[in-house]
Amino acid sequence: MGIFDALRAGLTELLSHKMRSFLTMLGVIFGVAAVIAMVSISEGARFEAQEQIRLMGVNVFHIRRQSLTGDMLLIARRKSPQGLNYGDARTLKEICAFVKRIVPVCRVFGDVEVPGEPLHARVYGTVPGYMEVAHFQVSHGRFVDDVDVNRRSRVCVIGSDVKHRLFRFVEPLGQYVKINNNNYKVIGVMEERVIPTGKAIVALRDMNQDVYIPVTVALEDFQIYSEQPIPLNTTSMRMLQRDMADRPPLRERAITEISIEVGTAEETVAASEAVKRILDRRHQGVSDYEIVIPAELIKQSQQSQYIFNIVMGAIASISLLVGGIGIMNIMLATVTQRTREIGIRRAIGAKRTDVMMQFLVEAVIVTMMGGLLGIVLGVRSADLVSTYAKWKTIVSINAVMLSFGVSVMVGILFGMFPAFKAAQTDPITALRYE
Image (tube, rainbow, N blue to C red; front, side, top):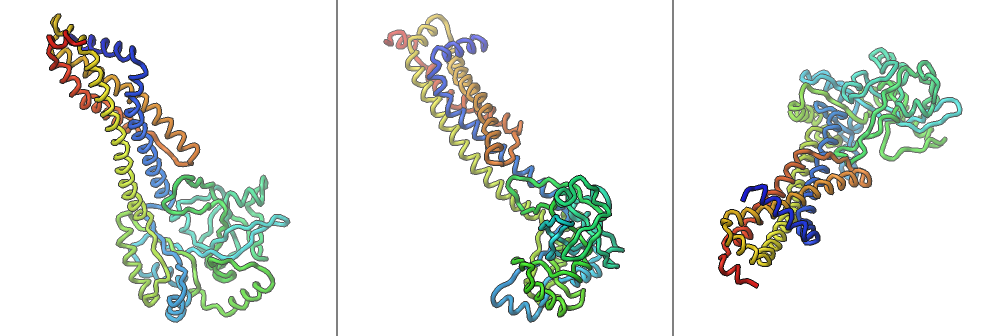
């Protein structure tokens, strides 16, 4: 009996019992679908992680101002009253020859408006290297340069959303916007940045709503941003003016963040440790800052993702195992039901290997058809997850081939025992079977 004869006989048997065959396939269908859906979600998460690396910079780490409370706040006020400050950035730039760029960033209070068009936007003071460390480019015009920083020029670069909301179809370059009662000339518009909408490893702000000014202007004319913004009424304005009058020299004034770019991703950890030692000495051991390394966060997330994949793979494997047990159970029942048929075939010359091949091929056909239906269900499930749960999913051809291959192996392994039992049936006993 050839393989094609076995295939034809197997298909005929399965099609003659359609409902039984379909129910036998269900375990394989759901197991394969689960593997494809889970791997698709995992691939989507990995892709978004890579996108975050691209957006944040694999060779960049960030030093961020840390809010303190209780006794730590009292200690910080005595030892390091300003927390992270502009002098830290200047000192790091003077000492750290191993870094490519050091970019201080200072978020400040500021309501942005043109005549008749008020807008609450985020205002950041920064320096020319910001575009490189943020991987964010100007679409037209230019960014803040060293001349603007040194001269403390009142110029600004606006995000794409700010441009659309304030100027609509009017060319903004050369126009003026008012930020806290001072006029700033628009010198550039940033490109539009698309923010990933799925699960984020690191929270990314919508940079399209930002306005950038020279850091020296921000430190000179504004109050640094805090976690609880103060409403700009008459009383609070007087308080801000009084606080600003008593502020320390420019070098000692507080900033929000320092972004540091190094040569390669492998250098970020060593560079961050060196920077931490310098800042600890300057801040007298007060932990009023934190260092965020995107590449390290990505690695931690990938480790969690690996554990998630193992758990999901185990669940899918259990589904395939249950499906294999179901196949073996049905095939054993089929062997018993077809005992007389086996006896007749053996009596007219069929070998034990022919009988074994026939039943083994039937089991493999069941799992192959279940695998194909499972692939369709898995791809569709991934699409539904992407549409309704807003998780990015990527169907991997490797996952499809792996799950289909495993389904075939399940058919072979769990079909082997029923096929062997059928082949061992005594023809004389089989012919007498009723």
